[in-house]
Image (tube, rainbow, N blue to C red; front, side, top):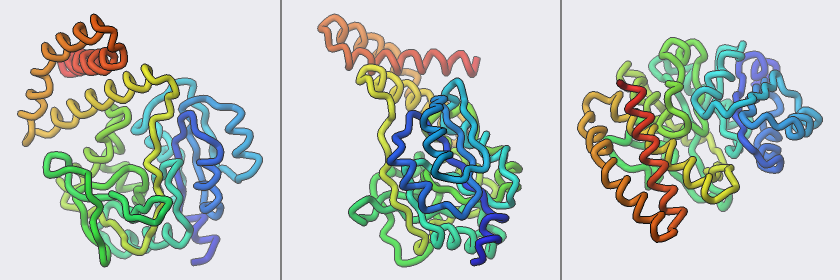
Length: 289
């Protein structure tokens, strides 16, 4: 495909948080032909300079506060001026020809809302990309594909959409900070009877990066606070699975007991784990009441 067409038709949005330059370099190095918008949720001026010294970036925004996955990618899309948009994680390496495959699939299928690449690890082993929504199954096993397949949901690491469709559906729900926002988007797509297609010939190397928080206790708190809150909110929004949301809420007394027990025996990390869940439930109750 003509380079000019790629540049005029497709923008790639990437959200960073405490990113390692070597990781993001590998991703950016494969997508030089495209317009790129970067949002950095960690206000890293040194990283910005390094990237802009080596790559042409359409827009590079430094946020003073970590807005999370959903708000960050919504921010990139609102700055996009092309008809098509690729949501891409900084640790997801995809080549030009695979992006073209995603573009061609969605362009030629009016019922298709979103396309995604098939993920592999560094050793070229197939990894989980798409499958069932959380209420219908686990995200444990990759689909063994021989061709393109419609899936109920896909990971938010690589999502190719028409900009207009994504705006019309309401973007990501910004109440989700880090988890379940891709699931909830895909559930809305399914409700509109549109398809999510995992494209077999589009390949991405995704390292499924770890949380970037270095401090062990802070990492434990951050991961479990946001996962608990986002899971509660996901099932709260899903009327067909409202019971699961109520089951999670009922665990609050148990979490309180285990929090005090673990701190009494100086099992600090485990205590932080339960504290995160307690505070997430309290925050969630404030949101809905």
